[in-house]
Amino acid sequence: MKKILITGGTGFIGSHLAEMCAAKGYKVTVFDRYNPNYNLGSLSDSKYKNKINFIFGDIRDYDSVNNAVSNNDIVFHLAALIGIPYSYISPNAYIKTNVEGTYNVLESCRNNTISKVVITSTSEVYGSANYIPMDEKHPLQPQSPYSASKISADNLALSYFYSFNSPVSIIRPFNTYGPRQSQRAIIPTIINQIENNKDNQIVELGNLNPTRDFSFVDDTCNAFIKFINSKKCLGKPINIGSGSNISIQELAKLIAKLMNKKIKFKKSKIRIRPKSSEVQNLCANINVAKKDLGWSPKYSGILGLKKGLIKTIDWYQNQEKKQSVSSKKYIY
Image (cartoon, rainbow, N blue to C red; front, side):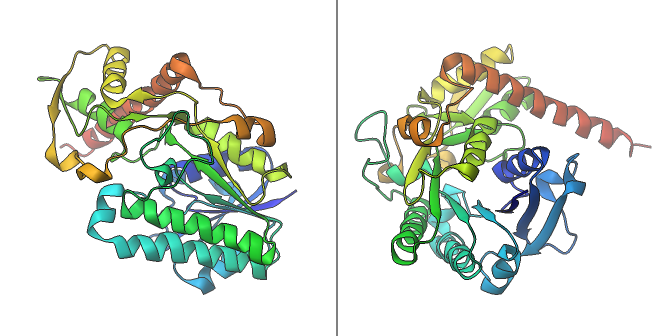
């Protein structure tokens, strides 16, 4: 059975992917940032954690990355800084983590003769759509330091394919959502504000007009799995999305409806990107994924979005209940 290394494997997408690989019988190793308590992040309560090998280090350090990569067959590289707002404050942190970190992975894979390495990109590399749906030939536009770092990482990965014949593939997910996602992301932000602001039902957001293509995390992880045996996907990016988009305002209204609540909007200045940095529209053309990867989303269209949102809402509400019960244990 193939041995798979997942960098950033205790994070949102990485944890779901690690569980999915373990469930399929692959030998899974997760590499994530060293912490003194050996906290397993999103895998702390996973029923699969005893089937997963954990290695802690620093994606910015070649030696620790090389040590993690050795003795594996396939590498899924997800470790990255992803918060766009922080990239305005510290662009260099994104260069060191997203670009140098990707170099460490690519070089380690080359030196350890890994059979396949899948680099995780992002739809943010496209910037605002020149046309919709956006295929892989859409121009790249770095509208934030985060986007620029990911464009750099993608091109570095392609250079290894062309220069060294490295078995590199690039998966380019659009806006993935689902259980365990950071509170900073738009869907958890909306859910938690609706759940917690029980009196005024005011939801504070940034720009309401931009559209996004939301892909449920199970679909994204299934796409990663497809790369394991694919022979048609080397040396190119492949879009992964639902193939449809929705505005942030309509998304919030839909979530409120699913939660049986009515909401009002309040614009929050701290949630608004600089004008020229805002990506107005994103929508994936997924024809290449269907043809070359043999993948298609199970959560597509408005019905698929509703299905995924219901699962996500249920998870966050259950988390609230668990925290409430846990806190009551310590009231004397």
